[in-house]
Image 1 (cartoon, rainbow, N blue to C red):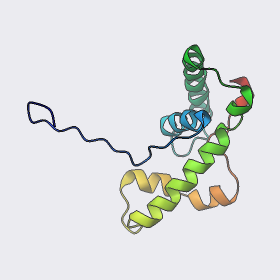
Image 2 (image 1 turned 90 degrees about the vertical axis):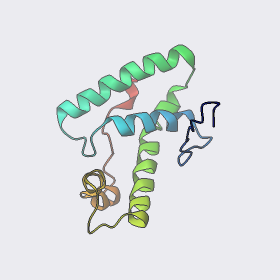
Image 3 (image 1 turned 45 degrees about the vertical axis):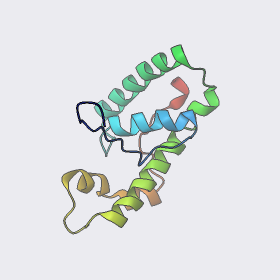
Image 4 (image 1 turned 120 degrees about the vertical axis):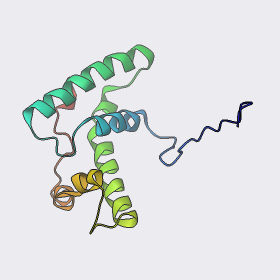
Length: 123
């Protein structure tokens, strides 16, 4: 609490010490639509990641092999959310965000469908 009596709340729910590739994947995960398959969405995802990585590399060094792991961390986040939603949400009456995310999610995960199907060698 500050001197004026204002309180600041931090949500540490996803706070963790992890690989830098995971941090990048998390940014990409939340910038793309839940069903990122339309060419326009993929182009926007690629443009975002291109500019994000340009800025990132001004401040940090990241070996290319770790960029190639971004899809692994996207899949990890996808499965983590799938589990969390099953645990915490009434799937008979989900909010719009959860309903959108969960649409065909089980089949996508089991089928190995990439969350964002980009050629990460270009980044």
